[in-house]
Image (cartoon, rainbow, N blue to C red; front, side, top):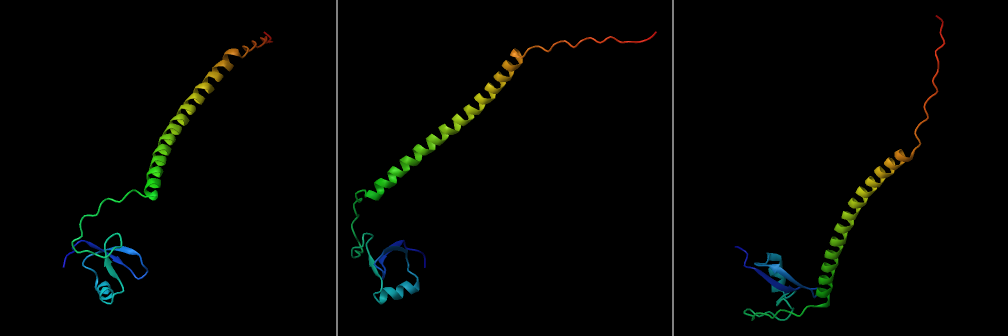
Length: 123
């Protein structure tokens, strides 16, 4: 027998959980004993042909999740900008190091010529 969608059930602990239909035999037994009860997604008594439920108002958790998504997007942007700055700083450091080397060479006094030595020799 193939799946026929899902159904919502209130479990013994009071939680409402969505389950695939048809239910496994162990759940059929629990439904028959009244241990778990089929309900609508909001926990109200199950209506076989329930009208479409309106979209619920956003909760505080939904607002926080949206804020978190915005913060993550901002963090990604700042991280990319930081990484670009690191690359720019590395390039600038290399250019500065090269400029300092050239400046050092240009301002270093020229070496004094070595004293000529005369060859003593007989002859």
